[in-house]
Image 1 (cartoon, rainbow, N blue to C red):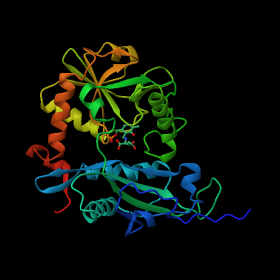
Image 2: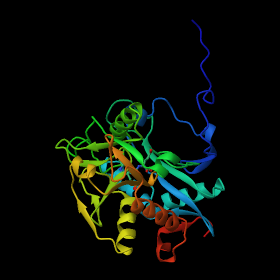
Image 3: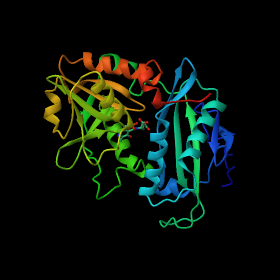
Amino acid sequence: MATTPPSSTDTTSSLGAGLIWLDGALVPEAQATVSVLTHALHYGTSVFEGIRAYETDRGAAVFRLREHAQRLLDSAKILGMKPSWSVEAIEQAIVETVKANDRRSCYVRPLIWYGPESLGINPARNKLHFMVATLPWGTYLGEEAVRQGAKLMTSSWRRSSGDIMPTKSKAGGNYVNSVLANSEARENGFDEALLLDKQGFVAEGSGENVFFLQGGTLYAIAHSVNLRGITRDTVIQLARDLGTPVENTMAVRDELYTADEVFMVGTAAEVTPIASIDRRPIGPGAAGPYSLAMRQRYLEVVSGKHPEYQRWLTYVNG
Ligand code: PPE
């Protein structure tokens, strides 16, 4: 039966990304397409970042750009990729893309991936490509989850261990683990998944790091399989500057059940209070006061309201 092949634009839905940086040029979203034989599409051989730019009094500012650009290159290095882009070139592409789309605030998604030069597992002959997209993106787990606290479910999927997947790399393939855990939680009526390691220690959310408050001390879940969270680092510094004692810790899930408060952090999730885990209310079963205050503080800092944290902001208009 003769069929008409769809044109590339028929299969491209618009996410409102506008102009996308693709290998050195800004192209409209509908034209920023790749071959179906792209190595990364078959084997997950890509590395990415999630960054946010926020509206400030001086126009859009990218939050902690250097740390994100450096982590992108670290992720590539872990996979054995040899990108030719410097950290400065990556930063510049990001700033240019935010500027070109005249964004006041947005989510920024850079991606480095192996192209279609050969099919088969070994990527030695595949070229690396680099793109940056900027998207309008609101609260990650929904407005209600932020206001009332999100409902977490311990996932039946365990966090990949470091001897199976390179979990410090933000590699596309690693995210199958997160997709499975998050989908399971959503299909069961929860907002987000909490992943444990094989021994039952709390690792992280499908896309967030975890904190809990107990007796006035803030505990930052520390687990070597977790992504080195930039928001986690930000929140630790903000908490210490506010005089809250902070400790890095491993924890099992029942320590979270009985905590005074639990919250999750990430570039997309920002600071999201947790109301319940596995249907057990955390504290009063609503967003806790410390979590809400930290969320507020974080949103002020990222939008340039506190001069002492200006070093974390890159203003796209200079
Ligand atoms: N753990 C994981 C597994 C993770 O994906 C993220 C970010 C974090 C922790 C927090 O890291 P940081 O953003 O540096 O504070 N998750 C990104 C992807 C979200 C998505 O849906 O895609 C993000 O928040 O941008």
